[in-house]
Amino acid sequence: MPQVSRRLISPKIEKRIYEVFVVAIGKVNRKDEILTFISDLLTPTERVMIAKRLSVALLLLRGNCNHREIGKTLKVSTSTVARVNLILRTQGTGFRKVLGKMLREQALKIMLNELYEGLTPVPPKGVNWGEWKKTRRERKQRLPSF
Image (cartoon, rainbow, N blue to C red; front, side, top):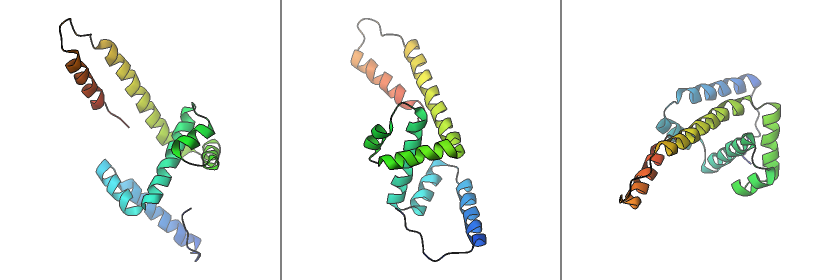
């Protein structure tokens, strides 16, 4: 669990530094900027912890895993999964908005992939199947991922 200083600051200053934090996050918009900003701002442990919480929320929103499966897969406790689930149920508008976009993009990618699979003809007789499969795999990898 991250450590918080025992020395309290006034609520006014706390609100102001939180505003600075939010504005700083809002200024970052390219992937390379995001990566460097996060690596400068957070320790490796904090990065993993936040990424796991986001992944828990994503899996909970998808709805096809139970708490134990999520905990076992992501190596988090079931209490962490339950806490994220509680946040999703009681507040969670930020989680739902961002992760909902990710889920829609993923659904679109899957749909396009299936469409592409249907449109890709089977090569005619005598074609090098290994080369055809390799080309098909490369095309799949070029599809946008989230």
